Image (tube, rainbow, N blue to C red; front, side, top):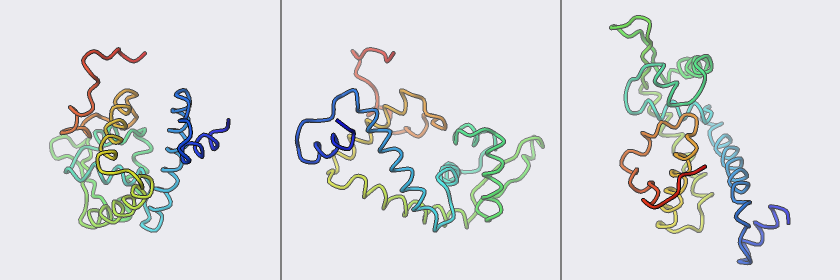
Length: 179
């Protein structure tokens, strides 16, 4: 049975997707979400990576290297990303006064406004993707995704994104380690 047939079967309430195909459903959902988020950000002239960088900078100024680690891109790619954001006046880069070799990056006022617009755009995408789930199901779904993200140590996933939520995402004490 093709994945689309399984999805249609799930919609009708027939038998669920076989467990071994769950990861393939995640792949399809991830691709669909990425395409929809990318399209939603186009009018705002941002990409998902731009949004990720702006989101990380909301917490305050940080070094370019620290931002690189959190966003999960190669340093040379981050320079290009920051060049885009700086050219649009969304971020400000300056030398660290205590170490002239380091660059400090911070969100500009225009960046704060663009970040708010981008978050509003992706919230609409999220609402579409999660239509039909009640608040508890949304919370449960988010917790499962957060745990899965921890398990695979996603690029750009430092784990600090879970601050305040980590207890919700811990495996049971008797759980077997992933192999």
